Image 1 (cartoon, rainbow, N blue to C red):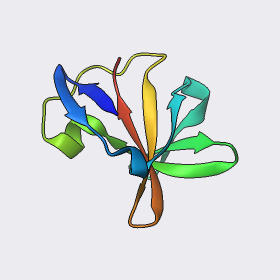
Image 2: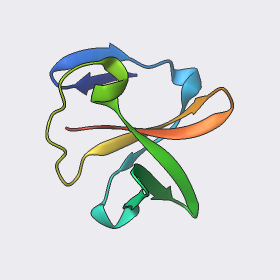
Image 3: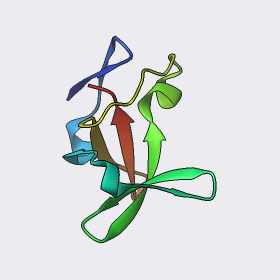
Image 4: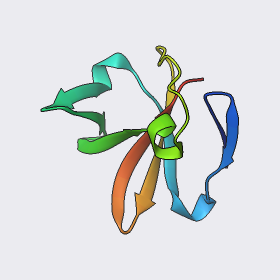
Length: 82
């Protein structure tokens, strides 16, 4: 799957992608200093794609998407502005 992160295009292996979800404000929470995404009664750590790929952050806007990935048997949400 190809994703745009701050104007850069990256490929994510389909074998690691569980789903893509729209990040509605009601589903985004902060626990301590960490952002999380609430999806179907699960709380997933939210990793900003800009941080993960080492590029400048773009402004997150309502209606952005998160890719729910499996990494080392753990589920995480990776967000990216549209």
